[in-house]
Length: 260
Image (cartoon, rainbow, N blue to C red; front, side, top):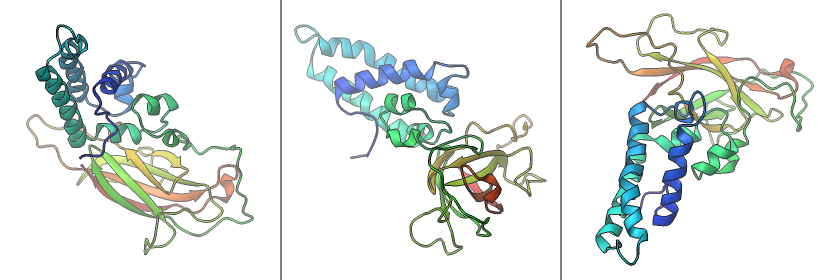
C-alpha cells in the first residue's frame, strides 16, 4: 500500500478534499500558486471534489442513497487522488514550499515540524544562538535527489565524501543557499552567489525538500513549437550563523542538478 498523507477513510477524506480545495484558492497569490501547482493540477484536484460531492451525499443517506456501488465509487476516487499525487508530487510540493506555515501543514496533514524551519533571507536574530569565535573555512558539500514534480531533496555534508547522514557543521545552525532555475544548455549561467538571478534563502536542517516550481523567472520564452529543454537548478551554499552573519563560512559552488 502506498504511503500517503491523503486519508483513505471515506469520512476523513471528505473533510480533507473539501478543506484543501478551499485552502488552495485563498490568498493573493493563491496558495496553489505559492505551492507551485499548475492550473491543470489545481483543476484536477477540484475535479476530484466535484466527482466526490454527489456520491458522498448518497453515501451519507443510509436509508435511501447508500449502496455498495456508491461506497466502491468513493474508494475509487480516493485511490485516483492518491495515484495522481504520486505521479505529480503535489503534497511533496507543499512540503517543500518556502515559508511553510502551521496552517499549511494542518490543512494537508503533514508534520508541523516542517513549518518550524526558518525560511527567507538570512535572519539577524534568533532565540537560540550558537557562538563561534572565528569564521570557518569549511565548505558545504551538497548531494541532490530528484523527487519529481520540480521537487528536490537537498542533503548537505561537511566533507566531499558525503559520508553518513546529512549534517551541519558544528557551531553553525543554518545552511544558507542561493539558487535559480535555468534551461539546460543556457549561456551565462551564474558563477557567483551574488548573481541577481538567484534567490538566497536558508534551512535549519541539513536535509530538506525544495520546491523549485515557483522559480521560473529565469526561463526564457521559447519559439512556437519549440521543444521545452530540460531544466536545471544552479546552487551556491555556505554554513551560516543566525545571529552572527559576519562569522558565516565561505560560499561554495556552483553546483547543478537536473529537475524533473
